[in-house]
Amino acid sequence: MPSSDLSPETAPPAAKVARRKSMTRKPTQAQEKARSQASDLAVGARLRLVRERAGLSQRELAKRSGVANATISLIEQEAHAPSLASLHRILASIPISIADFFAIPTSQQNVLFYDEADLAVVTRGAADLRVMGSERRDKKLQFFVEHYQPGAGTGREPLVHDGETAAIVIEGTIEVTVGEEKRVLTSGGGYQVFGSQPYRLRNIGKTVAVVACACTPPMI
Image (tube, rainbow, N blue to C red):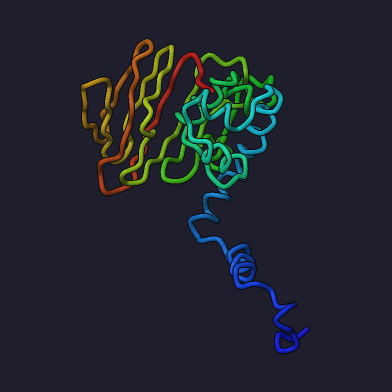
């Protein structure tokens, strides 16, 4: 029916019209990108499943993990891709390991070859982490290829790995923070962490930083 045929009684209130417009507003490019990244990893669907199996509401999970309720909701809607540290905190409060969370099928092959596109995605976006050997759940060593955009890193929450981690900077400039100590590493430099030392990485350069990292036992 044309709008000119609407009487004052039948015309929709201005608030309803505004609400309809807001509901049909197209998402921004950044929102679409975040939604695509989260959807590719299927983090949201998995998180909702394990949360419901544990009998937890979003609010209770947020309280346990210290992650905002709104963030939990966005993750489950595939509208936000969490950092590895945030995801670890969320899953540890359920609890479930990251390995079980992604539920990667076991492979019995003893020799695995990869092209760049074959590496399993851990996170995408400003901090892009890919991993080898995801098919073998019985592996003792794990190898990551990490790309950090300028200003990006592992997140505000430090990584804690009860094992041994060694990495080398392939390209760019990385700041490594361990406790109160900070070191700046450039191409060819590296670090090795023993035990449960909390640490963070951040790209303080102006170009993409590339890091090759190995850890044992596996994180994922």
